[in-house]
Image (tube, rainbow, N blue to C red; front, side, top):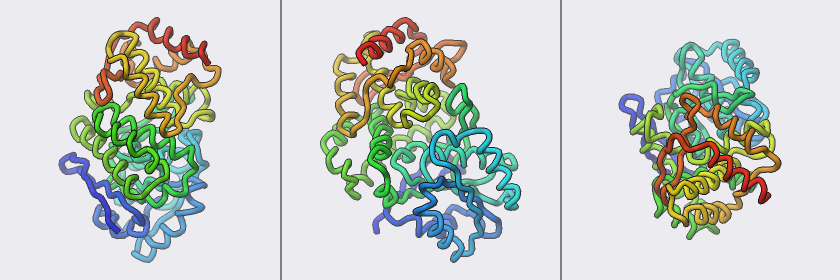
Length: 367
């Protein structure tokens, strides 16, 4: 089976992203190539849904190759990115005898990757971890080393930059996903095109039917291109001092939606899709973007069955206050990633709050 490999270039901390069918069974070899020691005990973090399908086959393959592992299984969903769950996993890591040569293996989607990565970043001041994503959404979150847990007042406010040793992306796992989760993943795929590659957006529009059907060949191409966009940006700006902020298109709105609904109404991809549409509307309203940007953004998102309209009964004023707690806010001033055109985005500072509120109110009234 053909596998695609690309590299996140970070000098001595560079690491591979390996993409292809059946890679979980090849995990022992890939872990060895990533210099994960067989002498130490390792911790697999996963959720209940993923565990039912993939945990035991992975543990058996690792055991046959001489790896010793303990599994920590969490409830699925954003609510598990909490201080309480983090403390529980840290306790399990200590009780399992993990040492400084151990690794945390994140088997699952973005929630598992963020949580497991933060455990790895803080256990004994930092140990290795490996991302084994099982969702389409995680093609974005598994690359780049952003790891975090949530606070009730905001998403990902407690976190670190901690790069994985490898990303092992078994695309066969995606075929077991509910369609809603598939759609959520495409939100981040589309985002990568919207910020830097108009030709990729055109390709996504042209091949929407095949991609939605999870055609293996076309899906691998989409994941590879999305990962390549992110890998290039992370290699240039690892800790988000500049260009990496572009990866947050739609996220300032989206994270506010998620936090205000206690992470139980919209999933991440849905919230980001609506956020990208709002960012396009704000960009057009202030004269920053071409007039067709919103229309085309909405159209490509709808091709992948994503929501594009105001979420439920959220009050625009409450959303704005939640946005002010975003990590990109400095001195109380919002910084939004806005599209200038399809395939071009910039960070824009000091947008008048009244403009943002007006756009949100219009959306809410049209609901």
